[in-house]
Length: 501
Image (cartoon, rainbow, N blue to C red; front, side, top):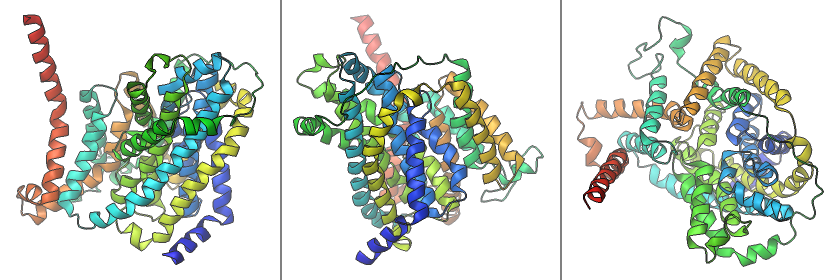
């Protein structure tokens, strides 16, 4: 084991990997601090760059940029009351209230310090959970893999903030998109409309870049420019943070635990972890009346939670190829592109690469503190960057990146354009894009596991329920599928009783 760890350090401390970590950290901080540009979009734009990097350097850029973007999204939230990323929205009002009280340094310091601690806690959970679950997952057959993938898809629809019906519709659209082409167990051309370009199916990467990056550009055109940040000299950023750490250990620990649990759930992500943690902080607080007035308690718990969920979201991604959130959905595509195919055998066949990922996570959260302080100092210049200058650059990155990663194929650029329109109109009408993305990423796994299982059972569906683990996963999946209908019926019954009374 010691030899594996030494090899992992050797993989990380190479010139190209260190440069990739540093450059992607700065990139993530800048993009995350621009209001409206999400961490997912920052990650999607990096995919074309990873095409030219070594496997460890490629994954390092995804890990570092996403962690930095999640934190720096707090900066415009604190100073402008505009969350830089969705993960910052849960506590934006609280952070801005502290700024109005003259405590901007404390609010930004909390976001920075507890984000870094939460990220390290999430990494420790990844180090502990992933190898243990990998041993268990080696006993999985195609029956368990099918139900696990279905459970992941259903969980994604349950945690969506929109209606479950719209989330399920988005997920089914993603599954339908994976049916395009001849990459199926039967090798039959489906939904190609006579186009030779569609025979190879729709690649996940152009679809992801379209729905996250290009749709964001289109959305920015229809929205007003955010207010400019007034220049204000900030004091010490980390002053008093150690005192707050000792004063609120329960909130920090609870935020880490909630973030880790929600991160493992497919489709949940950092924004869901932040909302749940902030609500929990208020629910169990001794002074809930202070929330919304610039109280640090909820800020600490939610800030720790969103970064903790980032690392734990890699557990299902590395073990089963099931994304924990939209960022790991993009990361899975990069892993396959670089030959690091997700699966339980990854931890035995490429153990040094797995330890290298752990080191990168910890290193990224450590350098977040000094780089984050610098970013906060220069925030007034970055936050005030005009959209008219930023969006054309992003548009060029989308087109050039898709063209390069698809082997200089112009069809990929058209895919980005189409999925940009799809993502824009879906968000505009309340359909969650994340559910569709999970359908695109996991559709092939669902179909192949299902068809292979039917071939093994000679067309019988009984083996899907006979194995102990498969039966438990099937029960959980069916419960998740029927839960929206049960909730609707329960609400109707209560409404009828209330009218009768």
